[in-house]
Length: 577
Picture 1 (cartoon, one colour):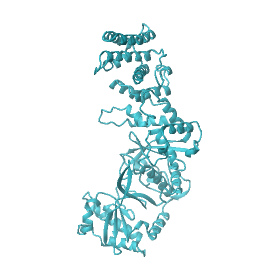
Picture 2 (cartoon, helix red, strand yellow):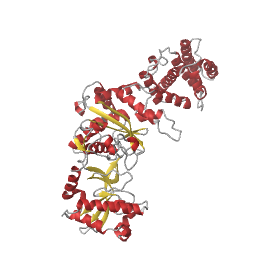
Picture 3 (tube, rainbow, N blue to C red):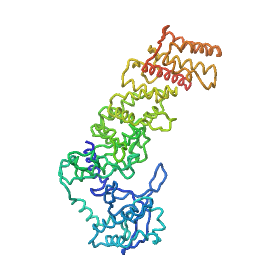
Picture 4 (cartoon, rainbow, N blue to C red):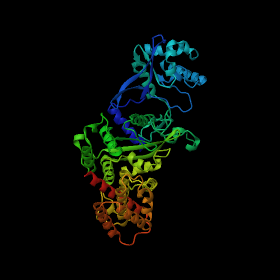
């Protein structure tokens, strides 16, 4: 399913001219080795280009379309027409002299096998270079010696002859394409395409997943007997053709290479795409899911947040937005990958129509609406941040919970119970209900209904008509705190710091104590303030009556916390007015 979707994406990108042909791949290049026709070194020049990041120019390594890279595990295998200094010059920054020499020999032989007999100047120049170059005497070359410290850092190097790159030479391109197309091997029926193709035993590497191997990790691999069956080896266990293996890995590498569109949720790297590879769907979904401030080259940069909300709402209702070329019936995909040694783990894979995704995301954001909120959309990273201890050494959110939360949002299913557990843990530990935490609390019980925290308390702002006892107790606590602050201006610690958790858990025990403190605070106020607070407290106590609950359940404590938050926000609103 995943491989099929990625293979279709590759074909869509290929038809749009946004990805390289089979046998070729976009690769970052650090240096160009400029050769004379006789194979001697003319110069070694950096290959950089200037891009704009946050309005500022920055020099980065140039991306070139080169022959597809080989898959390296522990063996020595050379790429064609490009590689690092170990293979091109036989020297690296690790001082592993013997291994570097073996790498150079492998590269030398590979280019002999492929370029021997060609008549072009470029092919002959490269062959002459490999015949002349001696890794033991590389420091004798002044051009190499002047660039050695930079070359051995591991950047990729390409060949250039007479001002033209070797990988752009028509003669060499032709022999490489024929070699790739005429690959020999066992013919199988590909599990992805259903067509007959040469079996790909080892699939190309995936690069760009955070904390995975920098050299690339495998999405599909069998490199140990424990993962094999019936005497099959490597890719024989799940036969996938050479073209499909190249297509799905190229498409995934293409997605991961776009850092603006690659997002993190805990330890999970998330990419998304639409059928047909139309970018406007991906761009809008990033705003809806991650609350991104759109970049200057994004189609949503021409839209304000109200327009974006309107577009999402229209799509959620199943209506197209022709002015932005958005259709609710477009198929949409989201893939989450996490590192797992030399492999990648699939945390989640979502596929549905774009309209259904927008409906689920829009409903999630509607549930999160709360007075005092700082965000138009509470982004997923912001939601997870509210559940995380920011004072611990590891400030990353729980990876399993992060994936479960994301799945619940995009599929419209119930929120995982861990959301409420982590939320209560943070509120009890910090005795703080931020707008984000109040929004999560409200959204959780709107989706995961519980009679302990009924709908009458799950409002955007204060429900003054609610008779829910835990909610009213929370409101009363907020009034007591406000009275204390009025009586003692500039006080550092309030009753919240000492009694908030106990008042939420055992109100019958704590409220009489708080009422006694409140009476003392009243005596410090002027008459007008006394009347103001007495009216509020009397109204709330009349709802509660004489019998206070001895204990509140966790959902009931959630109602208490919302009552406290809503009452506090009502107080702030009055100050603003």
